[in-house]
Image (cartoon, rainbow, N blue to C red; front, side, top):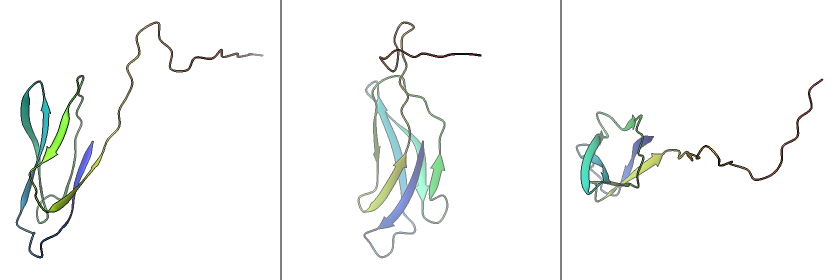
Length: 89
């Protein structure tokens, strides 16, 4: 996952620290701080095995998030439900 700080609606926003939160299991945890002068983007290596909610502390800045979600299949499940034929010489 990657978060980045976009432009603020206010003229002078360079000193604002923006906290990035994840809420899961009825807990709200801070897992990063973005700042225009110090660290405008952060990459994380996070794995959530349950539903979660992301939020941030800024009232006027745009926060961008890039992530991916994987599907964990059971042993007898298949991602595609069609027959696959393969021939080897």
